[in-house]
Length: 178
Image 1 (cartoon, rainbow, N blue to C red):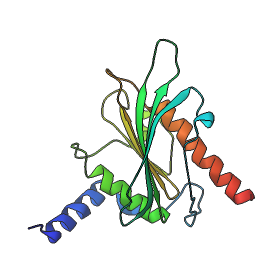
Image 2 (cartoon, rainbow, N blue to C red; image 1 turned 90 degrees about the horizontal axis):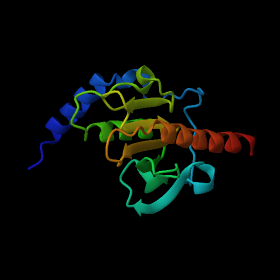
Image 3 (tube, rainbow, N blue to C red; image 1 turned 90 degrees about the vertical axis):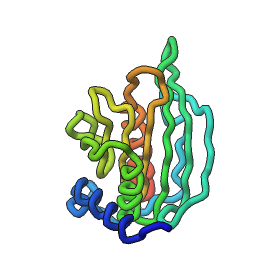
Image 4 (cartoon, one colour; image 1 turned 120 degrees about the horizontal axis):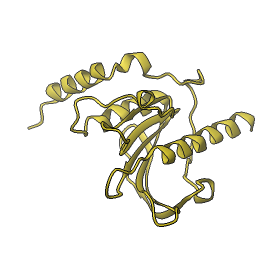
């Protein structure tokens, strides 16, 4: 039998550990009511990357859509390969709640903020331990992105994260203008 009180207590502990109340529901642009819809990673917009696979998954309570992408670098001699899961949530706060759901699946008790590792993406971002970010989780508006390297050896996902964050920001700007 599942103990819901224990699950909620653990969730609250994780939120406290990540200082959730200091960033929950906030965006860097100051617009916490942004709701981007039908966000998709278009290969032509991701320079230097080629889509290998795209799969839509069933959504859960806070997510409207969940899409998993596998991209290969077009660098000569090969390059990084990444798996990116994009959660399109119903609100900024729900994207942040989903971020907590995702970090709860990691074995590390706390992940470093991306800014401390020189990566400025998203409204809130957490990277991996070590010198190289092998994974990154960030929320920008109501979109949550989890990126993981599947390349043997230490292959950073930072460039892919920057590209993807730029796509989200571009959709936001087009939505504001339109």
